[in-house]
Image 1: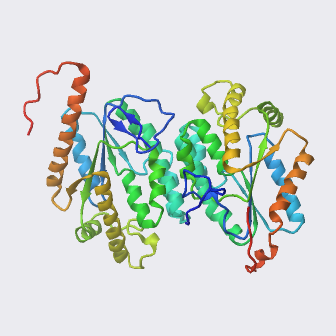
Image 2: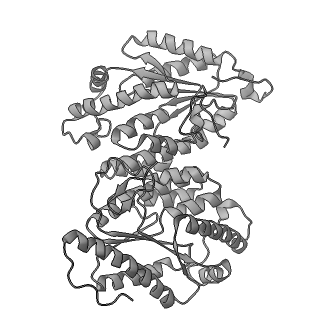
Image 3: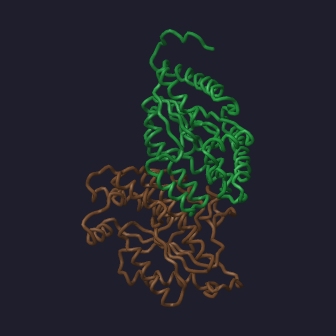
Amino acid sequence: MAPRTNRAKTWYGHGMPYVAEKRLPGHLIAIEGTDGVGRSTQIELLRPWLELEGYAVSNTGWTRSPLLHETIEEAKAGHQLTVTTFSLLYAADFADRLEHEILPALQAGFIVIADRYMYTAFARNSVMGADPAWTRDLFGMALVPDLVLYLEIDVDTLAPRVVQGKGMDYWESGMHLALGTDLFDSFVRYQRRLLIEYQRLAEEFGFVTVDARRPVDHVQQELRAHISELLRKGETRHVADLGPPPAPPADED
Amino acid sequence: MPPAASPDGAPSPFSRSQLYAPHPFPGRLIAVEGIDGSGKSTQLLLLERWLRARGYPVHFTEWNSSRLVRHSMSRGKKKNLLTPTTFSLLHAVDFADRMTYQVLPPLKAGMIVLADRYVYTAFARDVARGVHPDWVRAVYNFALRPDLTLYFRVPIETSLERLLAGRAKLKYHEAGMDVTRSVDPIESFRLFQSRVLDTYDKLTREFGLHPIDAATEIPLQQKLVRRMVQEILRDYDRHRAKGNHGASHQSR
């Protein structure tokens, strides 16, 4: 099936047929990567930089929707979820944020930085044993990001970071998969599987991979370079819409 | 989960969906469908009474009754946060949760599961709200095909009369006021539910639902219902429910 396009934007599958075609001049940038890789640190640094450059920024993060946040927390605490209900809850959370945060911000010309995107569900569901085709169908209502920046790391670098950081948590250690009774061992096994899935997704969806084993500021520089490149392309499109361009940008790298 | 084929070999766009082939379990799954005010719950109650009186092990499950999404659902409705997509997905969570806890275990244990509304409710309502028909079918591809789905078909005016006789006013979502944008609940109900009715008619052909004229007298409808249920119970082995899994069974 041919994807529905929205100017430069594309829906992943059938999209949301009832959402009127609107111009979405903003940019959607997804930051992907496993837990503890430093996504939020990097996003916190991106925002002030972009604002200084004159761009309005809107953030959105996995399971942060007002509609589902509490339900997901409660459900995780109550241990009654299956991989199916888990996936559907995440999809609902995602759809809520897409319609109430992401689309309006894009329409208003904001840069939307998404802390995790549908690929997180794809990776996790594969590891948990859900039908990968079903997970993809579920997110057929999603908008394809303009840029997916994937923070890549290996388990050996990740494990001490997580231990020293906020500590290993039940879910991110894959304890629900009963891979073992030892939290650390389970974490290593679960994250290893997850990273293999992310690697596959990176190829399938053309993520821009950034080596996240390096110091924070190195990673940040590289992220900024990729984002600048995207924005330059966007600039051209925007300027073209307005008519004859003003003076060209002073330097192009 | 095994891939399922369409029952009559017709090409199905959702070959992975289990909705096109009979389920393999010893129990029986009976679903009722229809718009609000069609009288389907009444008919299901009468059926349950009859089955219990005849000693069948029965388990009842109802649309939108799982505790898992109750909070999000009521919050979403109260604050008008629901969109067609989130409305659809919350119901899918409810359904998946009940599938796990309310439908599969009794079916595997050989019981008769009575479902007040099934996936066809989502296929009819959510599509009337504007989601893509293929998408919502894909979302529910884990659902089992019922052995019998009774569709209580009723004219809009009859269902309106019944609903308004029972209570003062129509509910916001039931009247589809979130999609029609009409400020008059009754006008909105007519508009929205006629879309739902059209979709049900298409589903009847697609999934082989059994239509019942729900404008006729209650005992008459119940007689038909019991006759159809008797049909699917003909080769039902009620001893299975007590742990005898010996004989083979054929579902329709």
